[in-house]
Length: 306
Image (cartoon, rainbow, N blue to C red; front, side):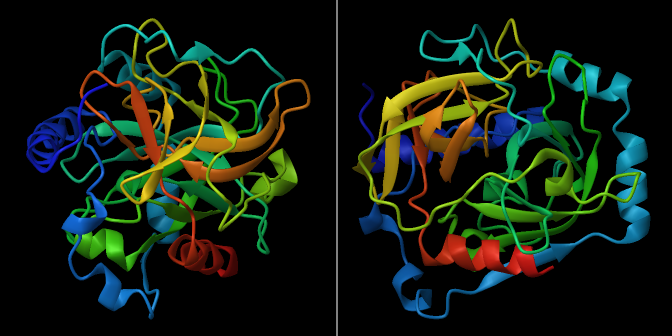
């Protein structure tokens, strides 16, 4: 497997920027080793979050923007090569809570991530990766026109579309590009129904011990799927660089997709314990996800109160 080093991190971060601008939305960079993170420990006690909100007008425009034709076009616009051997088309019970998160990135390009509806007080919360919301260490570079389509499959939107009203990330992501996790709040659908009243909500766990088997899911921009079909990796988590990692070759477009523990493909049941965040290289063999602790919980709590 490729070695993770400070020089590799710098090279991959530089190359990942170009890929994000081109339209994909998975940061193809190794996570920063804990020893290279500065300022993080001093801010830990406050556990601050950064909140972005979208007006009613912006939400209406977002829903109008993401037409069937535009969704089809954005998938065709990105080709990250053949789907790897570890990522398999998901063939279990349909996962209503998992879907594609469409948006216009900070460079003005149409793109997408993966996201998951979770149980919440307001019945409207969604979990994804922070880099699907805004660029790390760059407060002014934020994404717009965000719409969540749960249960997306090969052009079908069986449960409609939900415009994002609020996006919450840890302040550590905004300042230091750490804690790559985000919680969103979405509007009601066109019938006035709340998200989890329509598709249900995935249980979510914080401070879960690393070491169990998880299923990582996402809408990769690899062919032949090109974001049209949900892919799945299965692996046992282990600690690495202050995060957790599994063997997986999902890539751009799978960002923010859920890591489900205790997952049963027959019933579709499973607990969200992390999301797809970063890869080990541009030819991936490993996927990293945050260990969801206090900062992730603070973002989730803010979103479920919105």
